[in-house]
Amino acid sequence: MENELSYNIRGAAFKVHTELVPGLLESVYETALSYELRQKGYDVKSVETLRDVYHKQLLTYLKLSNKKLSLLKL
Image 1: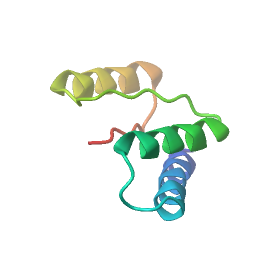
Image 2 (image 1 turned 90 degrees about the vertical axis):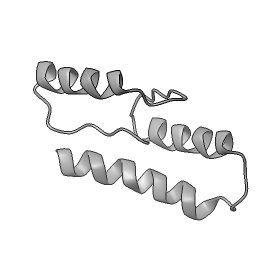
Image 3 (image 1 turned 90 degrees about the horizontal axis):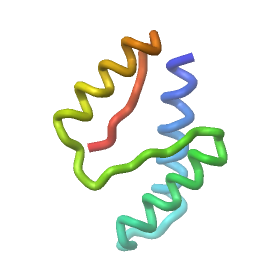
């Protein structure tokens, strides 16, 4: 399950990377990746700055949900 999730997310990111030309605004890539992830059935949450508290929050979510994988983009 975790391998499939990671594979799908990395695949969506790779698709955006290979299909869009370099030099666009970051917001264009973010929008495209959000679209690809939603097409695969994933909810997307994004923030401008990745703060230390998000790492701790993520660990808590993993523990409470009994999940083994989550991804944070730096």
